[in-house]
Length: 515
Image 1 (cartoon, rainbow, N blue to C red):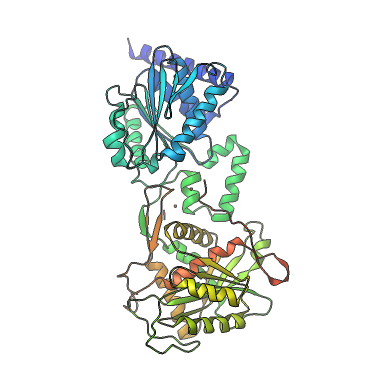
Image 2: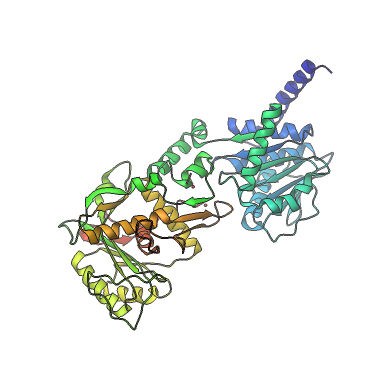
């Protein structure tokens, strides 16, 4: 067959395949979007003609990726029901991800007139339609999934959350004997993930032979077909900033670095404010206290109010950050959220909690702080309890653990990206030194991402980090106190009478950054 004839035959086959898939979906009561059909038909063509291509489908969150998977699976089971085939679908976890994928396919098979009476559940992880089967497996590190065979299609869902070594050792061999088509579905994260690795490999193969393998969409492209989606993402960008890691990866399919400095020079530029340091409140302004609790020394005298003990190189200080809450941000249609201007900093090292409590309550009376967000981890739990008794209704506890610190890090970055967190201009030497210490802690802070968006953001100042100007060891006490300002977003600052009340806060990672 000549090359011209071969290309013509392939084109006719592709057109026929598009029509058949479209008709199958239409009979099931759905019309897939153009970008879904484009990816779906290319995958189905590879399956039907045993091309053995490896695809990467990188769609933004909530743009129809899982829906497309279910319809591809249902269609293949239908057309292969008389000749037999095995599809294998691997998800990062069995519960809920594999179960959710199984249930989505059940809904399609149950509702479609061609399959509603024909399909059955062979076991708790296999669906059967005639001689066609789809096998659902967990790709969790400890799962035992060796032995399954994908005769036609091997799918890895949320591939950014599946370990590359797990895929290479136990999942990839499932397609080896049949050279089955492979599809890696997911959303962008880092180049080190399985999805990132396969994305680059598929791009290289695509460049060599010109056959489509990569489908990487952004929210802008989805928004052309779905106006409601465009409006939703615009709201996320307005709230968190286009450069926020979550916005970049989950909505615009942009990979990020797996580690490095968390507060880049660009972010440090965003935190520089034009307001002045304050030693006392301004009339009519609202203030909040942010408190990170360090250790204490019982055998040494405490520092007086406004004084500071020489810092121990092995112990964080207790750090207080006072922010002025800019309520004008609530009236800004682009923000609709408060601004947080740091106006005062204080640290204590080795102070007993009784003396610390007395000084904090005195400071609170001076500033009339409407809210106190306090680190209640470990030793902080006792101090938090005392503050709750002394300041009823004004104290918000925050307990540090891997999950809560991850959320805190993302949320704090969101405030910075939107210009909602600012440092003051300090005139006095002591005040300037405290502000510069906070800057130094931010510049020294590093991060390391987990394997996928569902995993942890590890961020801290390394134990060996030193202030380049002074040579002293750096801690993260002021930084952690400052980051607690993101918890203030969970409060209703519009409440009348100067009091605040707790309202549910939206988690920017729910559903799940160049740094």
